[in-house]
Length: 190
Image (cartoon, helix red, strand yellow):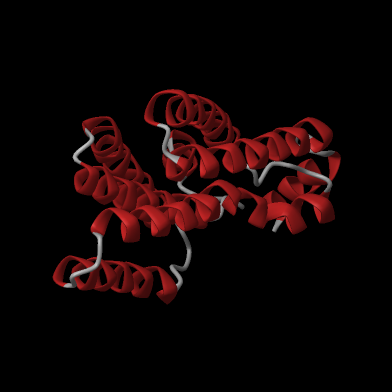
């Protein structure tokens, strides 16, 4: 986010990892509240604040904001209201939905896979996000399995760990690539 603010451009960084982080943290916060577990809701309340800030910075410097972002927020809030007003088990619904969103969030940087393979540059994979994903997934997998014994916690984090490793492998294979440097020079000339 610091680099985006300095360069006043999002470059090739997609918004999807950050919007999915907002939805993910919100769902885990609701799951933690439903289970009355401060370890889950407390951590995700902090994560939700950070993710919201990331989205604001990204959207501020993004040339065009897809309307699906706004529609996604409206649908998410509508879904939350529906669950709270229904007789459904809140922990089950929010837990299952949070698992789905976790998989989307952890895999979202791989949305740049086509760009990475085409340009032979992993520049569009945000390394800080990837490293944070790896650390997060390792810790939540251990706590979810060993302490909480909660498959909603450890299963998506084990999958997120696999996605994070795939992203690191792409970063190591392609780094910033030769073509990426040429594209920057072409952009400067144009």
